[in-house]
Image (cartoon, rainbow, N blue to C red):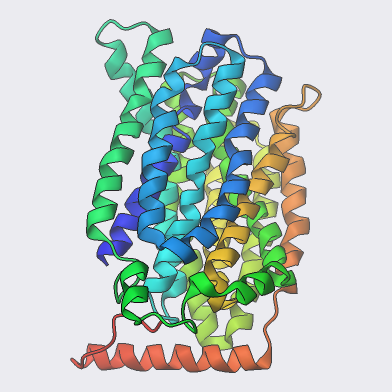
Length: 436
């Protein structure tokens, strides 16, 4: 549980730093003289690099372990977050957002770490909760960064300098968390990979870092790429909304910066419980219908997300738009939780690779969506509507995820064993920390 809490905190701060500049964009736009197309390019840059980094970070977790990988990412990622204030042109701001986007790979480490720590009957809930509470950073930053800016401006600093100084705050917090992660977590319940390999406790059969055959099998698995597409349609949408929401409400409904940020933050705040709900429902459906139950729930959640997004794009009244956005947010994040309620069961020997590929799908989806919102010929409303229809189409990809009878039987046995251990624990008997 110590790892559980430090993992979601690390992801929270990465999200906070990743999207810390988003609610300040009206000031950045005026300060640097950015056009709509240039703002769209910076949005694409902030999520594009993460596609590549997520593909790399998964195998790194298998090889180095999540403890070392997460600590390194936090330290390196804090630098562009703090240094974005040095940007003095569109080009330098674009490069800064591109560099910051790398910390979005923290999601893969988060899901990897909780997947190694928790048993089959609760892994969906654990994965969804750490990711959801981490994603919460995307909503909190929409609310907090304008307040941080207001405090800085209270010292007589100009707005042009204020947004630059404000970005130092999340960078410093990331460095503090990096130290905590290094000293207070382990790679798995039994310890760190390096020490376990040295002692022989981690043999070749169970060592993710040596499972080259498993990695290639994951890359060739159609189900992995189906989930890549599915995750693009939920997490990719969330990233897009995090980037444009404050600007959308600021311009469309003529709100103040703080008010627009507060409303935009509601979308991310749903993560405090919505993604966990997705994981919990995935575990509940698995208890009744096995792995196929997890798949069916994912399809339903994603399909409803698409309908809700189309509805949100049609709203002209502020109050109604906010209500529909909250409903839309609920199903976005439930879909994300349901996706990673399936990921741990695709290929246990290449968990990092599978998590990396699927996680990269979220950013690939955000990159594709970004082109809708940089076009001068499309309004943001039209872009949201087209994105909603794309989600409806992608929801059917979930149905392509199927499991062999052997896998179904094996996972059913694991699930039942975990349930028995849970009951024994409730009766006061000693139980293993995890089923892995």
